Length: 438
Image (cartoon, rainbow, N blue to C red; front, side):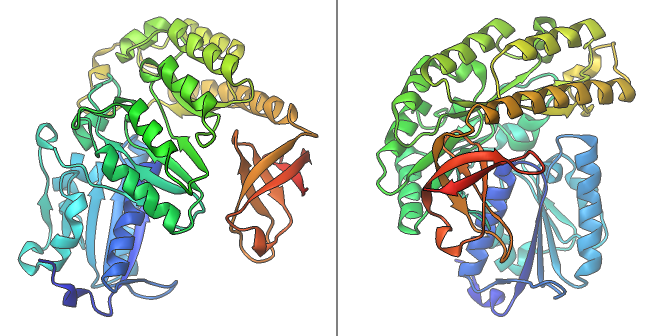
């Protein structure tokens, strides 16, 4: 049983690196601590508890994690410092040896953080409690909005794919998920709180059902029936798991938005083979064609990795040409970073940092062209926008159903409301469209 007295009059700070899933999990931890009487430390205050949720997707991410840990230890002397997340799972001993770190929790233990904080016998300084990735079984629920209008509902965790460049299966364990009935109840709780939009998050959410014998299509059908939730977005779906049935359902749904995020990683079949991806460029292109046939106005974001081992100049040009032709909206471009223990290290051909940078810049420029053209095609049209809270005196922003970012003059009465607008012109920085309330 949790001893709540240890939390009385305590202040906490939270620091998160990495993906939306990490931010959702940190926010959920903060929500649990708040319910026990812990408040978030204000700027300049010394915290009693520091929670650092880490990422390890690249060498740069590892470095940022170490810097964040050292900085928070220095800023909050005497605080009980807990480090969790992917970097903590993969490098637990290294993290535990950092001066000032009290507790390191792996992926299996993250969801039980409150129990570790409330039991003094589990608070030996520099202790690392980590389970081998093969034995990670727990699915820790998470549904929270943090400081944003939209909520993030974790539906799945872990991954069974073991792509050659990736450490996520080692950091988060095997694919596992919550039960549909439990996730539906969490969505209902969001509706009771007044939430309008939920983003479904996870590591490989199309693989939903491994631990419950259910299917992702059944999950979204059940969520679609929850009263009070106006919008759902699906954070990311692997091309081989994005079935025509899912696409068709989204096209007919009033609540699931015409917005897809699909990891491609490379448009070259030889590189996809080296990456150990489970599809080829033709399958990816066919999914895009199916989406656009059913939802011509759909926003499609795509992940691409440049400079992986084995990506020769010719192979990169194949990716560039493929992406230039395929009808997608935005590219999320990542430079390959070598990860210890991955199979990609066995591939001999290496790309120089300078070449990686040049390739990234070319794809980012292509992305800007595609996004600008997509936005421009909606100028003068009407759209429904969910407005988000803004700082006093600052313009308000929101998103259309198909994820066009919209800017309007500040009006507190519009916060968390879906309003009808006319899309007029680009903002000065070209990142949004100006809108007029109808």
